[in-house]
Amino acid sequence: MTARDTSPIRCAVVGFGTAGRFFHTPFLAADPAYDLRVIVTGDPDRAAAARAAHPGATVVSDPQAVIDHASELDLVVVATPPSTHVELAANAMRAGLDVVVDKPFAPTGAEGRKLIALAAELGRRLTVFQNRRWDADFLTLRRLLADGRLGTVHAFESRFEWWRPDGLQGWKGDTDVADGGGILFDLGTHLIDQALRLFGPVAEVLAEVNRRDSRAGRDADDDTVVILRHASGTSSRLTMSSVAALPGPRYRVLGSRAGYVKDGLDGQEAALKAGMSPADPAFGREPEECWGRLGDHSETTPVEPERGNYAEFYRLLATALRNGGELPVDPHDAVDVLDVIERAHACSKK
Image 1 (cartoon, helix red, strand yellow):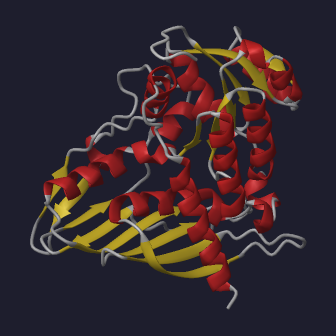
Image 2: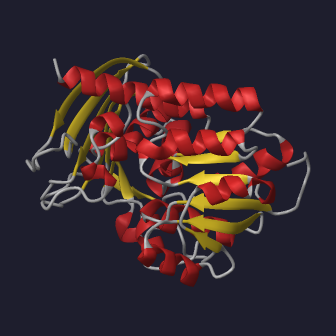
Image 3: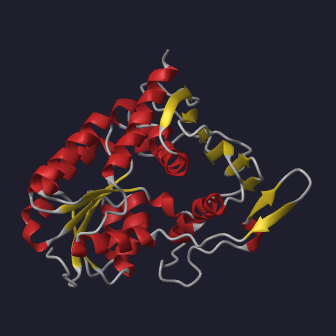
C-alpha cells in the first residue's frame, strides 16, 4: 500500500479454526479499514461456517489460491498450526504481501529470525498476533505499575489454567514439541510475552515441563511451570495447565507498597465464541464481580479495570500499513519469547 492510502486493506485469512474464526475474522469484518476477501480452510464444516459468517468473502480450500491472486490482496493472516507458519508466511511475502502470523510465531527462534530477515530483504511488513497484550487484566496491571501503586514488584505470578482431563485438543495436543506443539508453545507464548512486556529481559530461565496425558506417540506438554528471573530483579512464575481441577488466580503480584490479585480470565474470547461482535459497546468490559483487588493483608479495594481491546491490534496495524508507522507487535519480541520457550524446554531435560 502507498503511504497515506485510505482504501480498505484487502486481506485473506488462512485457517478457520479457533484462531481464524474467533480471533481474526471478526475484527477484520468489524473494522472498515479492512476488506476481508478470502478465507482458506480445507475442512468442509469450517468452510460452511466461514461462508455463513462472512458471505462477502470467497472461501477456498488451498492456500495456493492466495498466492495465485496476490495482486488482488494486500495482507495475509496466517492462522494455521505453528508447523505451517514459516512456509505460509514466507510464500506470502515473496508474493508481495504483508503478513500477520498468529502465535506461536514459529517452532524455533532461528526460524523466526529467518522470517524477519526475509521481510527486511523483501520490504514487507511482518507482525505477530500477540492479542493478550490487550487483555483487560493486563492493561489494568500495566496501569497500576505505571502509577506506582504496587511499588517495586518482586514477585509476579501469572496463570492460564483449565480443567481438561481428556487432553489438549487440536494441534496443541497432536503436534510434537519440535513443531510447536504443547501448552508451553500455546499458552506460554502469551504468559511469557506479558512478563517480558512488564518486567523486561530475562537473566535466567527455570522450568518444569510435564505431560500428564500419557497417550502414546506424543510429547506435547500439558502442565508446565516456567520461572523467569528478570534482569530488573523481578521473579515471574508462569503456570499453564489443562489439568487444573481448581485453577489459581489469574494474577498475583507482590510489590513493596501493595499486592494485586485478579481471578478469572479476560472475557473477550468467551464473548467472541458466544457470537458477540467486537463493535458491541459491551465488548471487552468486565463486570464488577470480576474486578481484581489491590492492597495488603489488612485491607484490599477493588480496581476498576481497563477495557479489553483486541481490536487495537488491527487498528494499529492499519495505521502502520497505511502510514509506515510502528507495527502493533515487533516480530523480534516474538523471537524473544521463542528463545525463552526453547530455554525452558532445554532446562526441563537436564
